[in-house]
Every structure is written in structure tokens, then in C-alpha cells.
Length: 100
Image (cartoon, rainbow, N blue to C red; front, side, top):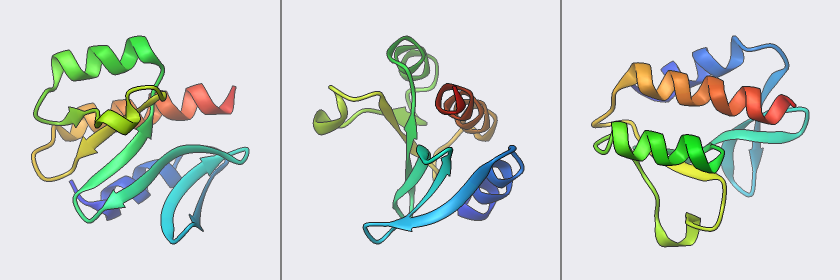
């Protein structure tokens, strides 16, 4: 999976807009972050805490949480060693969470 795949998936969801904020590309719905590029190989994805724990347990090679992220409703997705279906599902869940 690469950023073009992420872009294609997210922009197919109603109301999602790609924007650059603080020098980083991100995808937002109603002004709320769904996901943003962390670096060339990873994304920060919005996630509620129970879903985040499930992602970490079920897909440890794909998802992780850095110490600064622990207090936030976010998870880090590794695009290099990923389960593409799991990332797409996490992005869709983030979209549902953020669109309210």
C-alpha cells in the first residue's frame, strides 16, 4: 500500500478533503482529521481507544503507538509492512468516527 492508495480510498468517502496543514498532507471530514502523513512510510490514523487496542492486537506488524501518541485517539499505520485491508478498514472507521 502506498500514499496513492490511501488518497484514493479516503477521497472516495463522502466529504473527505485532502489538505496540507503544518507542512503535512492530511485528510479531513468536516474539518476533523481522519488521517495524516507522518512520513514516507507511515500514517497517523484517528481511532477510538477500544478500536486502537484491537488494531494493535490483531495487526502488530501494521499498527503501533508511539509514546507521544499514547494519550491520544490515534494509531500509527506502517505502509511498508501492512495489511492493506486492515488499513482501509481503519481509515473507514476513522472517517465514521470523525464525521459524527
